[in-house]
Amino acid sequence: MTHSQPVRQLVPATSRGIDDFPSSVRSFRADPNSLQHMKDDQVIGLIRDTDGEISKLQALQLRAIADLSVRRRRAPSASSEVAMALSTTEHRASAIVSAANALIARLPRMLNLMDDGRLDLHRVMKVTDATAWLSGDDVRVVDATLEDRVPGKNATQVRRAATYAAAQVDPEGAALRTERKLVERRLTLHHQDTGVTHLSVNNAATEKAAAAYARVDQAARALKTPDEPRTLDQLRADVAIDLLLSGKGGPSERTEVFLHIDLATYIGLNQTPAALAGRGPIGAKLARHIIGGSNTTLRRVLTDPRTGHAVELSPTRYPLDQDEFVRVRDQECRQPGCTRPAQSCQVKPIRTKGGGDADQAATFCSRHSKLEGQPGWNYEVTPDGTVNVATPSGQVHSTTPPSMHPGRRRTNRLRKKPRK
Image (cartoon, rainbow, N blue to C red; front, side, top):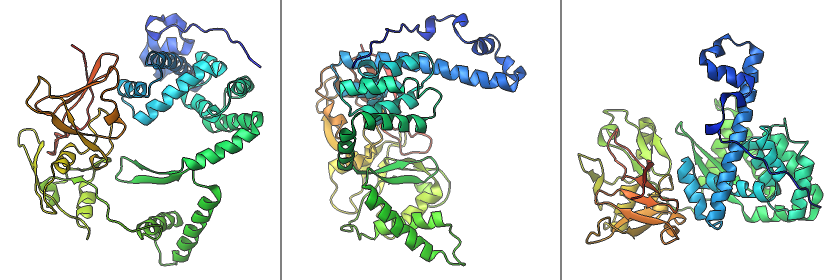
C-alpha cells in the first residue's frame, strides 16, 4: 500500500517577509521590547509560534542535508562534513543524516508535519529511529498511521506511538530487532561540565540488567545504616563503581589516562583548571585529588613558553617513544571537533604544507584516519602544527595544537576559510 503526498515548497527564512510569520512573531520582530508588555497567554503563544517556525526551518535544513548525502553518494564522510558545518559530534551528525534520508525517502508525512510546524527534529527522530528496520511498504503504513497521532505529543509519547505502530505492522521484525540490539550492546561514557561523568551500559539484556540492578540495590541497602550519611541513590552509584573497579567481572588491569595540569596548580599556588584528555577541563581540586592517587605516575612535559605547546616529554616510566609524545602533545584526535582521547588514537604522518622535508605526525581516531584518501578530502599540516582539513564542499577547517598553559588552551577549535 502506498500513499502519495504533495511536494511541499518551503521558502527560505532569508527570503521570507515579516508578514509570513505568525502574528505573535511579527509583533515581537517589529518591536523586541513588546515582550515586556505581553500578557501571559501572548507569551505562551510566542513560545508556541516560534517553535513552529523552528520546526519549519529544521525541515528545510534536513532537505539540504539529504541533498548533500545524495551528492556524496551516501558516503559516510558526508556525516563528517555535516558535523563540521554544524559544530556537532560525528555521532549526532550521522544520526541527523540518517533521519534526513529516511524522511525524504520513507516518511514524507512526518516531513510534511515539520513543514507545517507541527513536529520538530527531536521528536521526528524518535520516529525515524523506531522505524529504521521496517521495509518500505511497512514504513509507509506507519507513516500514515502516525500522521494524526504524533502532533501535540511529547518525545516519549511519540517514541512509544512509533514503536507500537512498527511492532504492530511487523511483529516478527520487532522480535528480530531486539536480538540485533543485543548484538549492539556497549558501555558508554559521557563527560559532563561539573567534574562528573555519566557511565552506562546500553542495550543490555533486560533480565541481566534487572538482576545487576537488584544486586547493587541489595548491597546499597545493606550499607544504609543509621550512621550512613549517603542516600540510597549515592550508595547504589558507589557500589556499582566499586564492583566494576574490583575486577570481579574480568581481569583487573591498569588503565592509562592523560591529565594535563600546570605546576602552579599542582603545588596549590592557583586554582587554574586542569584538562583530562577526552573529557576537557576539570577543577584544580579534583585534579590534585587524582594526582594524589596511589597508582598515579607523573611525567614532566616541557612546553614552549610562547605558545604553550608541548616540546619534550620526560622518559621517567620507560624509554621515550615518539608516538607517545605525539599523543601527549595532541591530547585528543586532531580532526576538528573530535574529542576522542589521544591514547585511543593512531599516530599517522600528514603532508607538510609547502612541501617540507618530512611529514609531521598527528593523532587521529580510527574513524577520521580513514577520511584521508577519500574523494575530496585533503589533509595538511603547517610548520607550526596547525592541521587543515579540506572537505569535498571546498571548506577548510583547522585545528591548532593544544596549549598546556593557562588561558591558552585551544584544542580543536574550528576555523573556517575558503579553499584557495
